[in-house]
Length: 196
Image 1: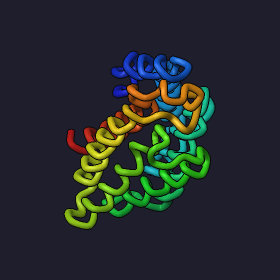
Image 2: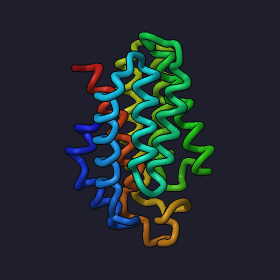
Image 3: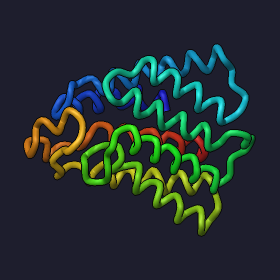
Image 4: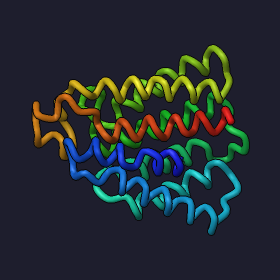
């Protein structure tokens, strides 16, 4: 995930410069670099502990709304995977569902508001379907990532109803939401990690 964020740092910043503060790529990069440092220092041994360490790094290092939102998502996913040494497909779905619930609770956003929820909610739906048919965690994450990509693209014509972009009203239309874009990047990175 850190590598994906680093690779797309400029793209995320460019997207955010159109409808936000123009710092989403920089913030996410700083947060995931801090996550890498924390993982090296703490050396967590379970998936739950890894997600918790990432959560703490993102909360402490990512500015704006993204830090608390992503921090909450990783923390909720961590709780969902507590006690799971080798998460299976249904565990992955539960973790994503928990992340989505956390983001929605904290950000009060719904699909159509032009936020990261527009990428994550269809991702969770696709993950549920895939888990029910294949039961393969890698395929679940790939289905989630593909749905997130479509969800991120779906934000382009929308006027924002949440966050800083909402101040622009209809002028936010025509631009992909940077939070939805970064959500897709993270899910794609998770899928790629299992495909490697």
